[in-house]
Structures are given as C-alpha cells and as structure tokens.
Image: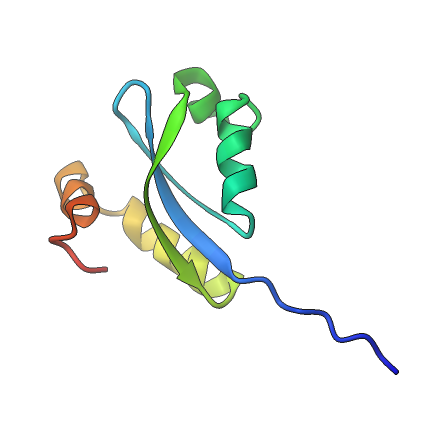
Length: 91
C-alpha cells in the first residue's frame, strides 16, 4: 500500500522586531520559524533587530497562496499594516 503524505498548510506571519519594525514572512512551521528568528537564524533583518514577537498570522492551504498574500502585505504602507494588525483592515 502506498503511503499518502499529508500536505502541510502554510502560514503568513508578521513579527514585530525589537526596534518596532514589522517583518513579514511565510512558513510551514510557525513556532520553529519564530524560534529561528529569535536565535538569529531566521533572516538577516531579524537577526540584526531581534528579538521578535508574533503580531499577526493567517493560514493558507498551500505555498502559492501564502506567497501571494505575503507579497500583498509587503506592498502595504506601514499605516496599512498597522490597520491590519489592529483588525481594522482586511486583506
């Protein structure tokens, strides 16, 4: 019998860095990715301006959908991102 591999969902996330900046990314292991960011292994930006704390997240069914949402968020202005975090803006 062939083993069926379970697909992992993807999460788009925004973290707030220690300097107040927002960093957006995607992952299929959110807890591990946050731990990586805080250990200086996540991304160059978060390594320089960490530690980080999770500010927002949204699950997507696949990597493609997560990447599209990540790109849309990265195009938002800071005030639009703040609205998203506050729950007043939908994306």
